[in-house]
Each structure stands twice: as C-alpha cells, then as structure tokens.
Length: 290
Length: 309
Image (cartoon, rainbow over all chains, first blue to last red; front, side, top):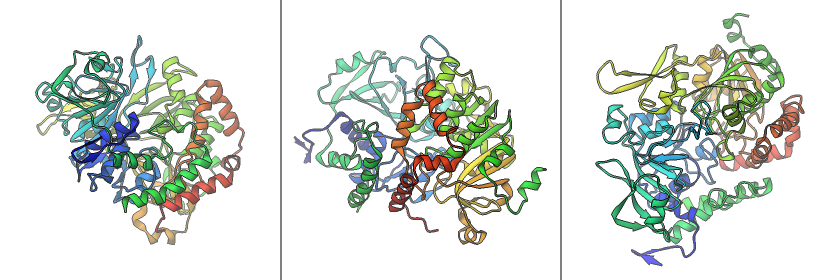
C-alpha cells in the first residue's frame, strides 16, 4: 500500500498505529511535555522522522534527551540521557506555565465531550472519599492540561470511559464549554486531539465539543458512536487513519524491541532479557539517531 | 539538641537506623525526594522496621514510601499529587485504604506535581503560600479545602493559592555528599532542593560520601548546601529497584515481581516479612537482592550515562 509516495507497513499492530498517529501530531522544533508509553514512543518516532528538532521534556526536570533506550517512566535515567538541560521539577513546570511548551500528552480513565479528564477516582455508587476505584491522581496532568499550549489525549474507547460528564475533573479540557478556560486564566489552549484505539477525535472551534474526525482502518463511525455516551457528531469529511509507514513501523520495533509498550511484554521480561535488551539497544538506537 | 546545633555539625555521618530513629517520631510529617525514579526506598524499609506511627506524608508522586506506609497503617494522612508505581502498576495499598478502609482509613488532600513543588518552594522560601495558574476550576480544587482561589489582586483572571509545605523531616537521596552535608545530584533532582530546605530536619542519603575537595570541583552540582542538612548517610543502591541517574539502571523485572506479590494484603505482609523484617538493614537487603545483580545494573548504566565526576 502506498499513498503520497509513502510506503505503508504491510502488517502492523493497533499499538503501532497509535504510536504513529501520536507522532504525527507533533511538529518540528516543538517542545513536547511527554508522558510514558505510547505517546512518548510517538514523540521519539516524530524525532526520528519529520520532527528531528523536537525537544522532549519530562516531569522529573529532564529536557531535550536523546535516549538510546526505551524510556521506562518520566524519571527513568533514559530521560536525562544526552539531554540539553536537567533542572528541577518546579522549574520545568514553571517553564510550561510561562508558555514555553507547545504540547502536552495526557491520558485518563474517563473523558467527556469537552475533553475533561479523570485520573483520580471512579465514583461508581460511592463518593470521592469512598469511590469504587481509586486511581493514582493528577501527578502533573492538571498542570499540563492547564498550561501546555495544546494537549494530546490518549484513551481506551469504551462507552463507560467516553462520558457526558466525568466523575472528577483531574485535568481540565474546556470545562463546561466555550469561554471557561478564559475565566480561569488558563495559559494553555486546551486539548486538540483524542486518539483512541478506534478513532481520532478533534474539537469544534466554536462549541469546543469533541467530534469524530478519523476512524482507524476497519472501524466504522457507527461502531465508534456505540462506544461514546454523548450524541457524537461526525465530521462531514470523515477520514481513515493512515497506518504506520514502513519506516515508522521499523523505528517502533527498534525502540520497543521487547514490545513493552506495543505488545504487553513487561510481565514476562526476565532480568537476563532486560539486560540483553539494554545492551543491544544502545548500539541500535544510537545508530538511528546518527 | 537545638536545630542549629546539628545543622552546624562538621561531621553529620550516621547510620540509616540512627538517622531514622533520631528524627522520625510518632505523629510527625515527612517528605521524600524522587520522581518516577530516584525513589527513597531503603529509608522506607527502615521506617517500616522501626514502626513510627500516625505519620503525615507530604509528597509529589511517592511510590514505595506512599504505598508501603499506607499498607502498614503507619500513615494517617497524605498530601500528594499521585500515588502509584508508574510503569510497574497502580498502588494496591492506597486502593485498599481508600476503597475499603484497609488497614484503616486515611485522610487525603490532593494537589498536582507542580503545585506540590510550589508548596515546597514556599516552605523553602519562608513564605506562607505560592500562587499558580494550575488547579482553579477543577475537581482537585473543589475537593481540597487547602487550595484557595482568589481574584488576581492586580487585575486579570482568577489564581489559585497553595499553602507552604513545612514537613518535620525530609529525606532526600542524592548521588553524593560530603560529611558536612553538601549534597550533589548529577542527574535530575525533581523537588529535592526545596523539600530539603522546607523541612525542620533534613536527612541526606547518598550513593557515596566524597571529600569536600571533590564537591568543590563542581560546585554547580551542589543542590543543597551544608547549612540545610542535619544528617548524612551513605546508602549505596538506596533507590533499588528504581533507577538512580549516573549510578544504576531501573530493575523493572524485580519491580514486576514485587507488584505481583503486594497485589493482595496477605501478599504485601509476606513481602515485608521477607524484604523489610527479613533483612536487619539495607546491607542485608542488597545481599538478598544479590550484589552481582546490583553491579550489573550499575555497569549497564555506565554504558548510557557517563558522569564527568
């Protein structure tokens, strides 16, 4: 398969498609506050393809790394590897609040039509104090949602996760709609995209409501609507998400050779295989950045 | 001993056991450094062994220190942004405490990573509060009476205020320090500089104690100067299974084994019997993990990150 001169991968996994889709949201020379996992892999794929001058930043205070291994968290040593700056947490977040960070990456257990995210608690029949499921909490997500110039949201597509209203707004999108972010003086512009395992959503310029912009190959708009709790609007110009290119797929498989983020390999990772993975990734990934 | 006496000591070395028993008391508030790595793990095990109670944890995103001390029932209150194990998984003890009151209910006041950082900054600056664009208009603010939203007194939109965090005791873990307490991070330090300064008593654990001449070679690496510090403890592999920048890689296979164990309350008890109470100190813990394994993690790290010191 080939379009616009790009050669698409013949076989690829859903996770690889999501990594590529996240990477395509990033423009060259941007400063991107990355989380862990698939969006972060996307940022690295962007750096190795169309955005060689992207600067990654993480919450621990590491800025502009070029790691020769998979980043296993926002405080992994890989975050400081070949970095341009290592500073404090409050300083990195202050730089974001000041307006230096172009994009942030977020996820959660629930999202609503205005892109508000919940990563604090699923109330169920209970309350905030005694919820059905206690989640980790904000971490830096509230700060990223408020201050990054725009945010990318990554979510699992399920009706119980795509809600009219979330139980708890950990990270604000557009709150109750147009004008709300301005009322609270949020420096950032809010969410620009939601990438799920079925589709890509963007936000209407005037109503600030999320609409369906693109479905992944093999998925219909009707199937997506079934997994959304509000009356989802569909773009008149509905697209199909392009699969990863062959180049992107190759990069993803090199970066995540043990399929930790793109196949669920963490539980079966032995110490010996882990050391082997680190040993071999240094030369392989260094070669890609050369 | 008066506060100024220990901070002015010219040799602050002591054992981890001594530092914890001397400074951490029942009912005190504690804060720890680390962020998604560089966690203060060895002191956590020691606090579990010693059993101090009714503690309040002030932290940004604690891992073992939050999860374990909730699980043992030693914490009565947490003021945090997040509590989990990052890539390794969620925090089973935090979930059990909040969802089921096991082993008992805890008070929770939530912030974000930045605003916990600002709370420590306010504490470190001797100011009552700090102002931020974060929090206002979200449920984090709505459910936390410690956060105040005011109109910007100079005009403009609303702003949120967060109170200074002033823990009784801070424990920060760094790459190296001298016996006076001059503390150097080679990699990231997250909120350590302010956590150390905001506390009444500050314990520095470090991978290696070095000479003051060695510190003076790269004074820009000194994140915390000696006048802040009360105790210095050399604790190699203090963060295991977490990574320590320029020292050792993340032992994620060990962490996955731990996560599988502590998933149930019984499993957590077994884990502590083995790794906290089954080891008399951190040396025995390292012995049990295996020095060969730890050395491997240090060796592999040097391949990726070589320090100039």
